[in-house]
Length: 141
View (cartoon, one colour):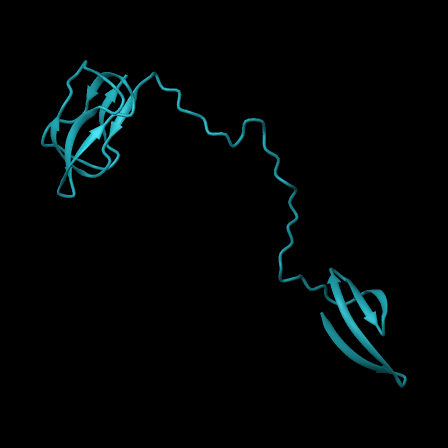
């Protein structure tokens, strides 16, 4: 850490301060190790010390849980845009990956598909509507 040269009563000493922990310093004086108590102000170290105990996880903590809905799935808008054509109607049975509607976003026509099979429970938009990203368009149950 720090090295000093002292002369006491005509004798030369090489002192190396190894470590200071609270008010106790570890010194190496001419090859001999000493632990000395410092009686003046106690300097707090600049590097913080972690003093909290380790975090223990509870059983099941940190696991992702699936939403337990009433079997209702929502088809949402992938981008902000305008609804051009709706391909399904209320009560239709749809399969996974089926195109539900066509919307214009960023000057392109995009097919919005469902990721679940089921029956169309609600259609929340109509042709010509402007929608925002993640807005619910159709509910499937």
